[in-house]
Image 1 (cartoon, one colour):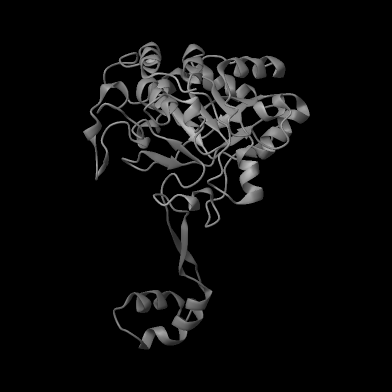
Image 2 (cartoon, one colour; image 1 turned 180 degrees about the vertical axis):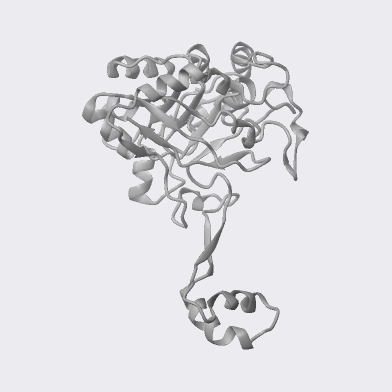
Length: 332
């Protein structure tokens, strides 16, 4: 049964970080990643193994099921066929055209090149939500006005503001799938509770400390790779996990599913949608990472029993963006 809005507001008051790092702060809980924390993360590298946590940005990505976001469209603007054709016809054809200009690269010399471009929503696959992505009651994180995000971009809390932090810290994997003994992924209707996060950490012998980035394995991405169904629901974090993040001074949270939190309204708050997003992004200033591919990391952590690692996950620095692609890596 969904919780009441009055309960939501009580939690919001408890976790709100507005003014904690100053009235002009646009980094939120990334402020918890100190220089000492970055050094601690580096000390976790023992095997020198680099594990990619990024999914493919392709036409077969997870966004095809949603009309307001599409999968990436990849277009070649120059290719080998152009080289052969333009080298032969370009100099005599359509003077002052783009084709003529490109042809000049190919005539009377061995130099050749290919070029391409991509058109896509910035949250088409593995990505970070910026603090400007979600708001309510006309306020962004730290009380900035919602209308500071315009058709020209986010003037406050845009994704580029995190650049000086880079997003490098101690990462901790919480493998809920393994803890439950689930075959592939967490079935809909079974949200991950704060108590379960504690239970998983305890079972794995790992402690969540100030400034960590918590990475949660729900198995959704593995399921998606087998079905290709980006709209299929799966369990996520119960909205009250926002309090757990606040109590543990977590710097950021990422998961292998499409929303991090549980999408089932029965496990949410009456009269609203994605309440954990509202609490994390707007009230706490805590960024959320979605669509992370944890396949190799899960296997490696289960193999050596080590669930902590250096996590390097800077977003693409798109000025004014409310989210951005990332190709994160775990280093063990």
